[in-house]
Image 1 (cartoon, rainbow, N blue to C red):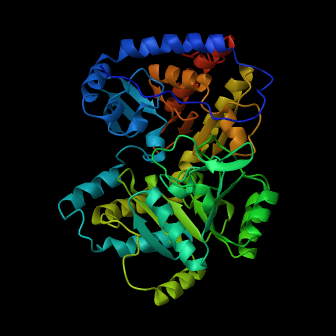
Image 2: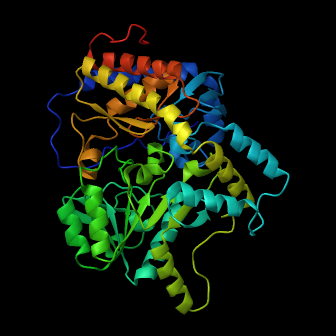
Length: 478
C-alpha cells in the first residue's frame, strides 16, 4: 500500500499572525472533503501509487513528487501545451508548468522538432556540435553577457559560479539571503533563526557547518549587506532578483542599486540567478530592470524541458578567470559533467532562443498575466481575505499575508499554510493545476483567456468556502 511522505511543515518565524484570521475550521473541513473527492476521482492513480511504492522511495521516482498535499500522487499520462491528462483520463489546465521547467508549455513544437532531428544525429559526444556557435551568439545577445557555459541543471551552474568566483577573487566566502533557494548547492543551505546563522533544518547527510564559509542575511536589508561586504572577504553574492522559493519577496526601491554599488565597492562579484525570474521578459529580470550582474544563471526553461542550464559572465570576470587559469597548476578542475553541453541540449536551447524566448512572445503573453493578477486581486478583495497577489512578469502568486513580505523570514512565516493546500487541492479537483509550493501560477504562450477564467472560477469557489462569503463570479465552481 502506498504511503505518503511527511507533510509540508510551516517554517519557524517569530512573527505575530495577521489581524484578520482565516477560519481553521472552514479550511480543515474543505481539505477533508477535497481529499475524499480526489480519491473518488483518481482510482487509477491510486493503483499506480500502490504499485510504484514497491520500488521507489515514498512511491515516486523523485521524492519531491509527494509534496502536493494529495492523499497520493496524481499520475500524468500526457502533457501537451497547457493540458495535462492523468491516468484516469481527466484533463487539467496547467498553471504549474513543471514549476517553471515547462514554463513555455509542454513539448513546444519547435523543441519537439529539434529533439526529433537531433535524435537521429546523435545525442551526446563530449565534443561541440555546430549549434554551439549559434547558441553562444544568441545567449550573448539575449542576456547581455559575452561568455557562457552549459550545465545539466541550475544547481550545477550555481556550483560552478561559486567555484569560479572564489578562484577569481582569492576569497572563500559566499553571501546568500535567508529563505533563498539555488538548487541542490550545499553552500547555500543556511538560514537565520532568531537572527543567528545555522545550517538549514532538515538537511539530509550534511556533515559540515555550512556557515563557516557562507554568510546569510535578510533580503532588502542594506545595512546588513554593507556590514557583511565591508569585511571584504566575500567572493560572491548569489541572489535571485526577486525571492521566489519562500513566497515572492520583491526588492524594495533602490535595493538592487545598492546591491550592485556595494559589491563593486568591496570587490565582491554578483551572480543573479534567473531560473524563476525569467518570467520577467526575454532577457530576464536583469535586462528588464537594467541590472548589470557579473554572472548570470538560468536553468529549467532554457531548453524547453530537457535538462540543461547556462551560466554567463562579463568581460571583466573573464579577465580574472583567464589570469587565474594561466597560473593554475594542472589537474581536474572539479567543474563540469560529461553530459553538459551535449548536442541535444544545444539543439533544444537553439530552438527556445530562436522561437520562444523572444520579446514578441512576452508581449503577447504579458497582458494575460496582468488579467490574471487583476482577477485574483478582485477575488481576494471580494472575500475580504488577509492575502494579496504578487506578479513578476508571467509569474503570479497568492501570498497568505495582507502586505508584501520584506524578507525571507516574513515570507516563510506565512508560507505553506493549510489554506494554501486547500486552494491547491480545490483547484486540482476542478481541472486546474497550480504549484503546491505557495500557490505559484505561470502564464505561458499557449495559455488563453478561457484557461485563465477557469482558474479564476476555481479560486473564487475555494475562497468563498474558506471565507464563508458568496462567490464573486457567477461561474465559480463548487
